[in-house]
Amino acid sequence: MSRKREAVAEFARYLRTETVGGMVLLAATAVALIWANSPLSGTYTALRDFHVGPESLHLSLSVGDWAKDGLLAIFFFVAGLELKRELVIGELNNFKAAILPVLAAVGGMVVPAVVALGVGWGEPGIERAWAIPVATDIAFALGVLAITASGLPSSLRVFLLSLAVVDDLGAIILIAVLFTAQFDVLAALAAVALLALYAFLQHKRVTTPWLYVPIALGTWVAVHSAGIHATIAGVALALLTRVRKDHYEHEAPALRLEHRLQPWSAGLAVPVFALFAAGVPVSLEALGSLFEDRLALGVMLGLVVGKLVGIVGASALAVLFKAAVWPSGAGPRDIVAVAMLGGVGFTVSLLISDLALDGPAAEQAKAAVLLASMAASLLAAVLLVRRSRVHQRAEEDD
Image (tube, rainbow, N blue to C red):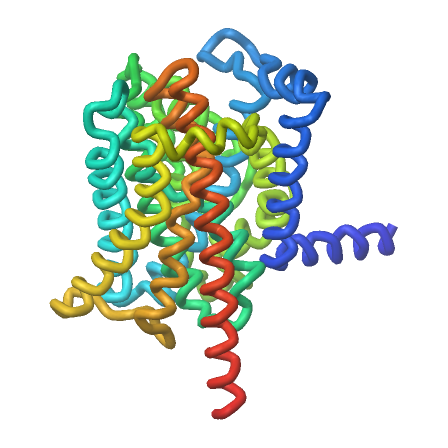
């Protein structure tokens, strides 16, 4: 029995390694793309669209939606725990350090939207499709960073994590404002009440999972039933979790939960999410026609160019006017490399494409998101590897 426990613990430790998590994520993405574009694509679609769950509380969801709204909430919870820890006792406990990724995220949302509107102006659907390139896919961005940037300062990962969380929250707010047909006030109030109860129990140092697990599940159901993107429940719960340990504790609740849930997030939640999100049918003919469609071109330029310009421009202005400081050990060139990852819109952008457009226009927009995200990933990988080597050489010289 002890050998089994040791093997499980070792496997969990292996999954906590960010490089491994990134590789599993990319492998799941590759499987999804191959499966969705193979002769077996019908089985992929049938499995992704198969509905599971009770009709009550709007919980009869497709397998793909369970992965996107359910499993991904675990990832957002883990990311939120890390963000809370950095804000309270880590890299972001200084206001000028904490405000930089927030301002960068705002710039990374505004500029892509302007680019998409400018390029696609006059095209049918652009009045809603301008929102497609505003989102950064936090899971994919962190996965690429983990694989390609082992030599970069850890502060850059914190910068990207913070930027992506703020960016995704902004995208979720946009979805709620622009595309939510119904908003259930009672469900929203229930979510607020459960979050308040969670915060109260944290304050009173209650530790039993027999209370916290039902509260977390109830919060997720309430947020989903309210018509809000359910992953926000994970972020909200994480930000209410205590990160400072008391004198009698071996570790704080946030660190303990992050340690326990990280393997589940990296080994199950994110790969399954990628498997059902990345299966976009593509063809050479469809990809070629993207450059003749101004709406699709606006989406691509918004992600690849707009994100880079917005994030770097907002960061540079914030530092220039002394409202913020660069991440410790990093400079403008490092920010450029990390900012390129902002163009990996992927899943949230695909979701907005589905909400904003119908029929062939939606398929064109999704193909544009896929192509732009792949281009941004490859460009970012090249830049990150170069910057990583620069930092490694500097360390060797020191």
